[in-house]
Amino acid sequence: MTEKNTPGEAANTKRNLLNMLPTEAEQTLRDFAVEHGEKPFRGSQVVRHLWQNPAPGFAEMTDLPVAFRALLEEHFTIPRLALAMRQLSGDGTEKFLFRLDDGEFIETVAIPEGSRLTLCISSQAGCALQCAFCATGAMGFTRNLQMFEIAGQVREMKLLDPPRLVTNIVFMGMGEPLMNWRAVDPALTVLNSPLGLGIGARHITVSTVGVLPGIVALGERPEQFRLALSIHAPNDELRQSLMPINTKYPLASVIEAAKVFDRRVTFEYVMLGGINDAGEHATQLAALARECRAFVNLIPLHPGGAGDFTPSSPEQIHWFARRLRAAGVEVAVRKSRGMDIAAACGQLRVERQRRRPPVSAEDNGNVQVA
Image (cartoon, rainbow, N blue to C red):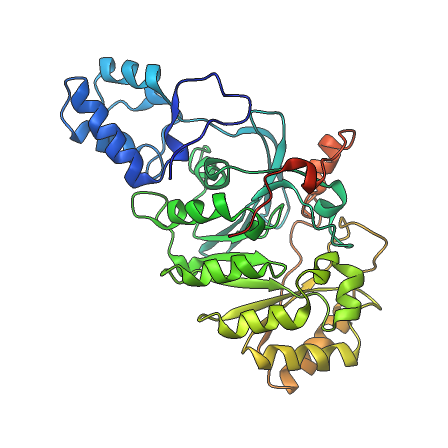
């Protein structure tokens, strides 16, 4: 991948090292070191400070000669995501609002569970899909994130004091990752690479509403990245009313793509009281899950979501889960986390940017799939 200027940075001649794949950055830096009279290994030292043991800036790379650090500062940049707000829930969930160079905001959520720390990351500023129950969809779409802005959310966790050591990644924050495959694809490499953040592929999950070209592209990668499908309704009529994308990618096509994906698939299913939580829905969902051997994750609706929906009661959710298990489907009920903070996806950004008009996906001109 060749790095690109960040928004508003066209006149900046410094090269963004975080918008290169680690192998490309290493070769670039080793060549740069030799050109300036240093040994090639100095370039490799810099690479370790990009992702593995990140430094806030070149000045903090104290294992490098002072003069070489000054040269790096003249020619390269390692941009930070500015932390605009941080909220801590009583259950340990933390939500981060990051400000980007162009004034956009994105959200990241850290969810601790025993020895694991799962980071829910964003792939777009806003979202074009307008799912009826999602606060991010209600705000509209602004732009795709670049590779360094996606992977940089994990990097920023390492730069906290004390650092947060992330073990798992889920692309379940703001945006539809497979509509930004051009940046998500290399970001996956950075997240997984030993020269990058070194997170195992099986600990990285990409969630999608069912963008078929992106599912194919993800399946063609050799790493064992996980796929989660946002189903949320077990028939086309109901799904169409909740998720307009169903027109372009109907449920049958999504299920067919899941069947040929050569790794285990998870169904994400948000529970909407009186909407998708009846016995007939459980029967239909079980049939879909059995068809592609999917694991079903039932998600209690966060009250901060969009629309006038009512969460299914805990009793109804567990009854629904029992119906699925009786039909031979593996199922889990996700714990409600961050209930005492603005933890619904997009909620914190809406509070910060509520007066800013959204941009439609068509106007952005940069929404693309594989």
